[in-house]
Length: 252
Image (cartoon, rainbow, N blue to C red; front, side, top):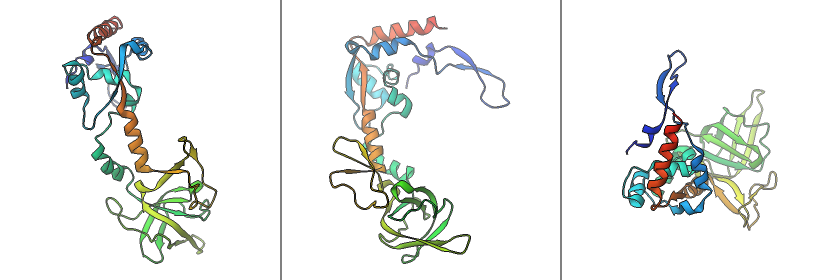
C-alpha cells in the first residue's frame, strides 16, 4: 500500500519510551480544516457501501484507478479512522469468539452482593466449575471462565450454581439461561431501535415486541455501520488531493 500521503506530514519530536531521547517522526495527528469542509459539502462526495473483503487499496483502485488515494477514506470518515476498516463478514464469528470467549449465565436472583469477581463456582448438577469474570447485576448476568479456548464447558440451562463464601455460607443461584458469552443477550431494543430495560429480577420475561441484541449482533451491526462511508467523487479527487497536499506543506 502506497504511503504518498505520509510524505506530506511534518516531522516532530516523539519520545518512544520513558527514558528515551526524542526522535524525529512523522506527525500522524496533523490535520487540516479542508477535510471538515469537504464532509459538509455533498457536491464533493458520494455515499458508498464497502463490499465484503474490499480493502482500502482495492477500493481506491476501483474508484480512482490508483491505490494512491486509500488514505482519503480515513480522512473522510471518522468512524473507520477510530474503529478501523470493516472486516469480512465470514470473519465476524471468529472475532466474536475471541472477543467474548466465556460462558454467560443468567438468573432472576439479586446478585449484587453475591458471586464476586474472582470467585470459584460450581454447577451442582453438571459439575462444571469456573471463575467469575464479570457481573452485570442489572441484567442478572454473570460471565464465567470455565476454561478452554474458547470456553466450551457448559452449565445446565436451569441448574443451581453455588460456592461457599468466607463465612462458610453456601451461596446459590438458579439459572434461567446459559450460553456462550458472544451469543448472550447484551440488551433489548424496541421497534424504533431504542434500548429497553427488563423488569428487575425478572430477566426471563422480556416484552414480546422487543428484539434481543446479542454481543455478536452488536459486533455485526457495528461492522455494517462502518461499511457506509463517504468517498470523494472521482471527478474531483485529483484536485482535492492536490489542494490538501498544498495545505499540508503550508503547515510545515
